[in-house]
Image (cartoon, rainbow, N blue to C red; front, side):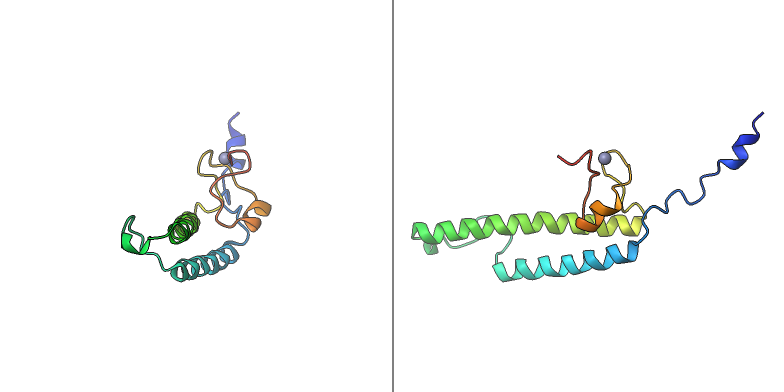
Length: 122
Ligand SMILES: [Zn+2]
């Protein structure tokens, strides 16, 4: 009566990512481009690590604030990309970080660094 067990071995259960190497190369391109943009902003990532004497006009202060805000968002994207590359190495790429469901190929193609499936996003 337990014969059905023999046909339910989970072979290939993790083969849901059909193009892991394609994902890796887009993530690596994204990583390089983010690093480049961050280098161009030329900000030391140490809060308050600039000379207050340079911020002597509202204009300069505003520009610094804006550059920092852009830097922070690039930094967050970079963290997502790095985390996705780590998941590729660990073999868990393409799985939602919240519910572990497959994220879905269309979503991954649009956002190779997506951490969450469509249900868990937002
Ligand atoms: Zn999810």
